[in-house]
Image 1 (cartoon, helix red, strand yellow):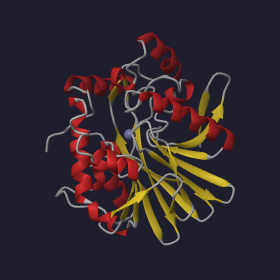
Image 2: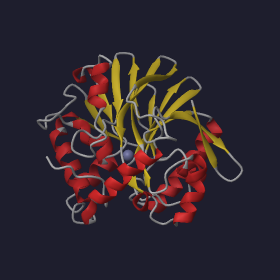
Image 3: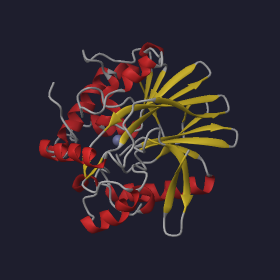
Image 4: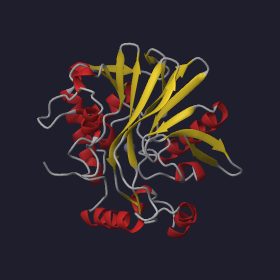
Length: 312
Ligand SMILES: [Zn+2]
C-alpha cells in the first residue's frame, strides 16, 4: 500500500527531514525504541511505549513564523530548524482488570519511521487481544491508523474503542472530505475506513465523562474538532494524557501563542493550549505528551514569559 505521508509533505521534504536527522544526530539522543514504566499512581500502572517518530517540515509545523523567530527558540536547545522529528508515545494503563491503550500509533501505512507499537507490545509480552479498552484522543493518522492489522482487520478485537463523540461526528460527516484541503484528504479517507472497520466496538465519550475508573475525559478541542485529553486520577494526584493539545516540548511551552500547522483550528488550538498549560502549571499534575521526547512524561513549570517542560 502506498505511503500517504503527512499533509503537505512532499517526498523531497521528507528526504530533507531525513537528512536533518543525520546532521543533528551528534547532538540528539540515539533513537532507540523502548518501553519504560514511567509512572505509577495509586493502583494505576502506566507504561509508555514508543511508536517511532515522524518528520514534519518546519514550514508545515510552524507556518506563520519566520526562520529567524524559529531559530531563536530552537537553536538554544540544539534542535534543527528545518524540520521537527517528534517521537510518538503511546500510553498503556493497567488498572484493576483493565488494560487500556491511549491511541494506537500510525500502523504501517503512514511514515516509515513510525508504526512500531505492535512490536514494542510483543516485546513486553502483551497480546493485542488482551487489550480491554482503546481510548482515542483524536482521529489523526499517527494516533488512529494503527487500529487495523495488515489485513485491515481490527488489531484489538476484544477492546471497547472509546471515541470522543465530536471527533466521531466530524470524521464521519458527509461533507468533511469535500471541505478538507487536498493535501489532507488522505486523513479523512483513512479515518473513515478505520472507524467503519471498528464500528461495532465503538463507545462514545462526552467531555467530563469518567471513561474508565478514575479516568476523566477533558475537552481539549482545537487540534481537531473533538480532541480529548484524559486525566488519570488517584487521590489528589493526577496524570494527564494530553495527546496533541500540547504538541511540542519546546515550542508549545515557550511560545504557546504561535499557531501550530497541525492544529485544524489554529485559534482554538492556541486558546486550549494556554488554558491547559495554566491549569497544569497550577495543579502540578504529571503529563504525558504524545510527541514529546520519549517517554514524554514530566511537569509544566511557569517561567517569566511562558512555560517550561520539566521531564521526569
Ligand atoms: Zn499527533
